[in-house]
Length: 325
Image 1: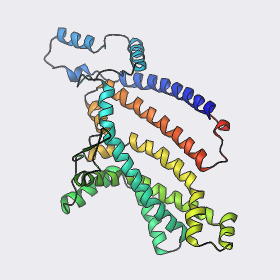
Image 2: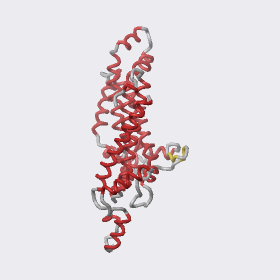
Image 3: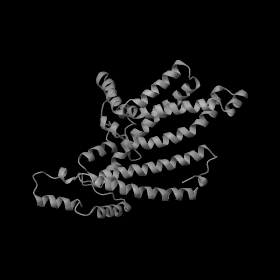
Image 4: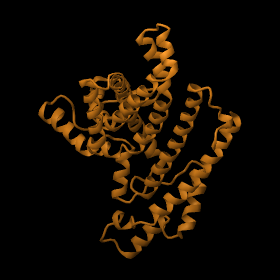
């Protein structure tokens, strides 16, 4: 276990270093933020002063080395727009994004597993066919279109739920969350449902396929031959069999939800990291863009490691010490 964790930590450092170079070069080679941040009527002296103040007068490799030196100390640079540490801006917005992603994943799992089991146990029933057809729609419909339709139906036409914003927040262990208040839950409902749609369809189809495969296995037939009830056979044997792929996929998809909540946060004006990224791209706030991408990469690495550990707990046959890199 210790050797595996050390090996993964070293691999993670290599990945972070490579990604930092790719992201830094890719972002800093595009556009000129001075054109956006400086008044068009400014004279040449003001422009040169601003360029020097932002550190853009140095060669790109010097800027990257300075960035690496600061990153080792936890400093990913200062925002050009807000003049505060870029990492601070990201961390301030992270609770909102994590809350939205977690709510979306809870919706996907809480609805996807029962619906997938139903479709797997009764594949030829009307309900089973309807569930599978609906899951295809979940894969096919664009997120931005579904978000607009949800706003039109539940906010504009029915007036049940708010269409934008996060609503009031309540501190939980020092972290502001909105799900602890009724108004916060109302604001969370539509964006969480919109973000969960794709993953809900994925969990349904994954659970259905795993259920169909497990039902024909010898251990399930043996359990039924012993006279165990259907509830025990399904709740213990079938669910345990399909839990490994579900944990693996949902764990990786959680990282994807955090990284790609941008569309949902933009549509519903959810004040998370994704909306901050879009706002920063509009003004070429390079430090914030780089900080966001590196934070997301780090989050993905942590999620992958957590999934591997959970995999070994669910399946004792997996030995982390022998796992491939």
